[in-house]
Length: 245
Ligand SMILES: NC(=O)c1ccc[n+]([C@@H]2O[C@H](COP(=O)([O-])OP(=O)(O)OC[C@H]3O[C@@H](n4cnc5c(N)ncnc54)[C@H](O)[C@@H]3O)[C@@H](O)[C@H]2O)c1
Image (cartoon, rainbow, N blue to C red; front, side, top):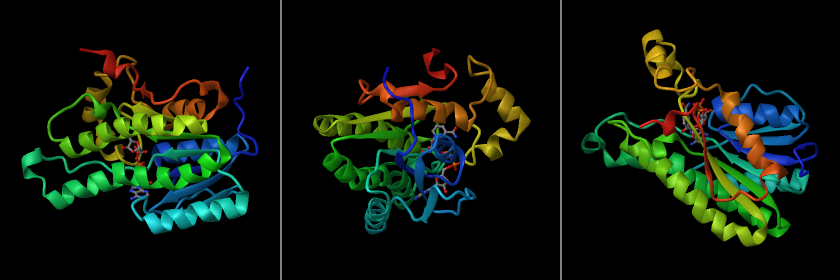
């Protein structure tokens, strides 16, 4: 049996201060891993095996410095979780200012490219690594007023598969997880409204919102040796939302 063991391993997690990224960091730390978290906000994780880097995933110089620092302290990077992300402008596309569009693409898609590029160089020299990107069911199933967010997440799914091809010769697996409606910092305001929450739950075959741990459980599987023969895949963790007509 392949390994589901994170002891002594080193991970970078973006968006580590809240929601899905935080849950990934918590689970990895609970499993004995060392984690470097990157987020634009402070993080309340207080453990010797956790280092927090306050930075934006869009700042390439800063991201390269962080990767160098992690290597100088720990000597390797076993895996990367790209969970940093922001919601879109919630308008019809024809009303979105181009600069506002660019902000969403920059954080959700270009940021993932920047961090992955920096970390891949280390993983390529190791001839081993795992990258897990957080996409969204909104990469493929749409409602009105979400073109910027949906385009960024469709881009994440394409980036994942295309990166997986470039990195396969180096024994690096790249996959994405597509959460459905998940209760996090991003969605708290909406789902704390009982009417909105009930309306959303009614659309989910499993009848409940996802919790961050529902998503990080799948991320940990994709970071583990159990998924060594999976690469370039987008795995839905959405309580069955996407299988409905
Ligand atoms: N919550 C959902 O229903 C849901 C559904 C599908 C996909 N997602 C995706 O999951 C990922 C995590 O989101 P979440 O729901 O946990 O939200 P969240 O707001 O709780 O967490 C996102 C984190 O990313 C950080 N972040 C934002 N911009 C950043 C930047 N430029 N650089 C570094 N960090 C930055 C935020 O500060 C925050 O801590 C996002 O990519 C989001 O699009 C969420």
